[in-house]
Image (tube, rainbow over all chains, first blue to last red; front, side, top):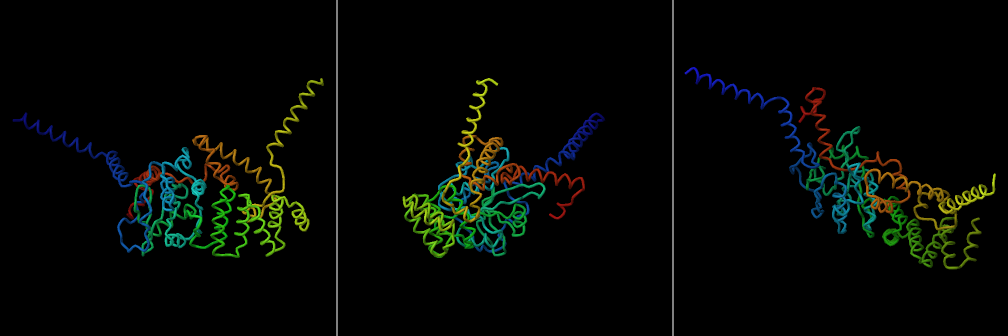
Length: 308
Length: 127
């Protein structure tokens, strides 16, 4: 009898020991961390709302979703934006021109350059959420940069805004979450920490929803500078069909004509600008260049003499 | 100084002169681009061209240093405008790079959790 009692006591003791081992603080910490890690799937924010509390005001359902692979939220977000603008592409195709291995990410300027390389106008919105909503109303998703970390410890992340709820919350394609609903304040916080950067891809025949022509023409002038005269020409014409007296667009159109060796058309537009404002030295200079290209050297020299 | 040395020096000076004059953009009559017109810096066009050449070399070096394939780097440079190259120059390590959130948020979370356990913060009491 005493022997058997001893045995059961020993068994209890080992059980107790095992329980103690199982609940050792270090192991508890590991389990808690694992649970948290499993909750942190992809780029979902712990604070974001995941249920539909309010009715949807706008949601662009047709924006494709490319779940991001490791560090590749730039190419994934950009692919969603471009495909929505009728470009045929995939994140993997964009990645070699976007990703910087040692930075584990993608720079904003390279996102802009990539949009241009697909014959679209990269247009940076004014730093207002209303402008993001305005673009959504026009049927265009908006690429945004967020800082999900702290100001001193930034964690930058690209996402695509595809909709807005009546209560102001935004709907995002983000990381590995196809439909992330994020409260307006939470979004604003992360967006402001990343410099309120929002970008759309416009086709040549589209104007931005905010109709900020100076901003738009500045973006188009970069397209011209890169050497894509055809797209720049289409953009200037888009502006001129709606704002026929925009002199900057006429000047730009003339420059794209010159770049495509259509010197007669270029000269016509430059002289039109000179007639409107005879003191415009840029128009005179470029008109003289066009005349020289047409071998009218005498006219060109006479024109320049008036300015020298 | 013997004549051979003189010849040698003359040759190298001339060689460098031609090399540099070939590299430097010549000031010439040319079309004023819309971008220049907007930024109204026509007088600085030549100086800008020179700065762009330097910026392009710097950014190329930086891209390759940061692990980008040299062939890809060349294509990526060709897509950037002059002012963009100058914005990137020397800032490749500081400018925001959007990437993965999982790993980094995890790290931030871990630090916050440790701070919480130690008792420095009480972020999680509010959740």
